[in-house]
Length: 113
Image (cartoon, rainbow, N blue to C red):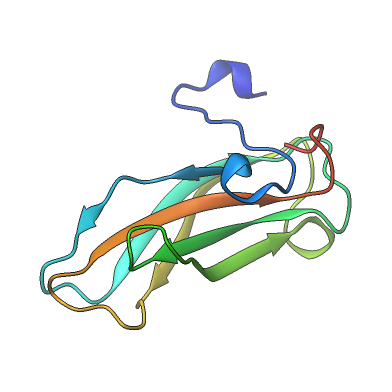
């Protein structure tokens, strides 16, 4: 379970910012491609529940979904999925822009984690 891991963040429900964990502002310099690597564990999610990796190039004013996972197709409850990797190239990014990324739960209940 999750109790034997460190650095675990719990996200649940489907309440936008209240159901998300966000990065700080990331200075991008001349970089154009970014990679996010993370582990996750799903608990009590129904087949239409899932979560998404989103990014923002305007300091969190608007968000773009880069990849979403759905329990029906992509994972099962009660298992760890380590070293999940997403590589992406944000649109409308320039040298002075910052980047933020977030993991957002897209579920139907506060009991869906």
